[in-house]
Image (cartoon, rainbow, N blue to C red; front, side):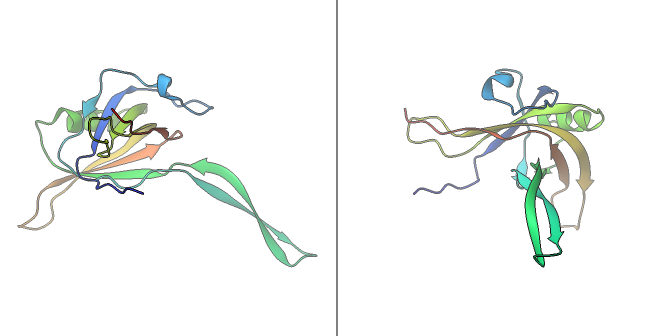
Length: 159
């Protein structure tokens, strides 16, 4: 079993890409046109959880639980504000639209000479807010991505 650090992970925003009723596959995502979101400090979490559907049975005196719809959550990204960063500019522009956008993450887990893992999904940019804090703080851009698809995982590969 091998574990990896988050540092070195990169996140990108792509073109508008409409959500669909079935799961995405890798070939649904563009191969070009990705813009890296720079100066990231935190990448938050992403992944499916199921809604709970509860039924309280009178005769059994037992609550039964079923799985409902799946929700991939809200990914909260924190960046140091960089007005010259094209990725941050793309995120700010995307927040002003009602569209979903392709998102790609490249993890820092490549084996020697190999290729790293990747994650792909579709999300709305729900927020792009600035955080200023105190004198000895870096001004931050806080990005909220409402994930509207499954997460497509591409495993790291040996050379």
